[in-house]
Length: 391
Image (cartoon, rainbow, N blue to C red):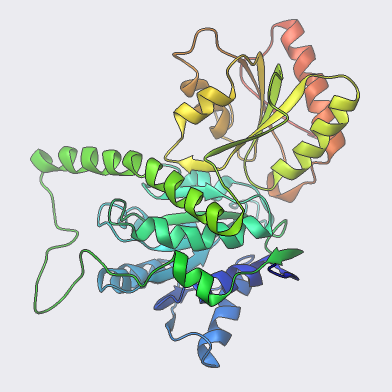
């Protein structure tokens, strides 16, 4: 039986990357992701990991280096947060159409201003449509597991797309949790040596990232969109194989006490565990409530989501980012769109909560449930409510 070890989640993430035997790491320090690359630099320095650790002058340079190492055929990793992702974003959009299977952990953090180092999902929503596969971990074990699986999925020749693992900053990154580690033999069985399909080679020249005139650009974007959507069955297949190997199964949409429930909270990331506690509390009071967790954000798993909400009357979306001037938070807007063709469809009540790391406790979910019922009774469910604004 594998032993569970107490460790900081950032350290567990770096252990997963070491076990993945990456070839190249390029990153620039920014809170709260820094502990991951600090620990990886120690692995490389003391010989525990045979990889190139490339310190750079910015996050823009970090992703640029990752593009080069991945194009050369190296298993490549980086990580960042918030303003770092903003600086990196120019290059983030280039990796998917070039079919470079880079893996990145995004330690989710608020964007300025005002300056904040704390957690919400503002940064990932900034690059929602960048073309990367994007998944969310709920706890430290999931970050460890999803990181290992990310390499296997990204490098699958049916996929060849970069993969972003989202980890809530501080709430997960700096917390010590019990992690069930994997030994190298088991990881090697799951994650074989990377054999790139395309690579830059002076002896076999290829063109990558070329200029495209208007008569070609639309077709390349269509191909990119189809490729991302086609990754969904591969993601499910790899997560199933990982579960068969470890006993820990992951699915694009996951539910808790949702069968027969008339109201579901909808969350992403670490909010899920707190929301499940609130569900237990509400169930004890006789309320017919469950939880729907979005594990896979891109490609969005429409079929699984429709199945999860079938027969549900109300969805209480708990967003962690604001779409300024829009109809609601980005997750609620996405879900309203996903429900458009359903008849009947659940009502959507949108709350934006937990901005910049503000605590959202189980009692706050209970309060959101009560407020949602009041909004439904008054017919006021359009738009959104930023929860917990001080008077």
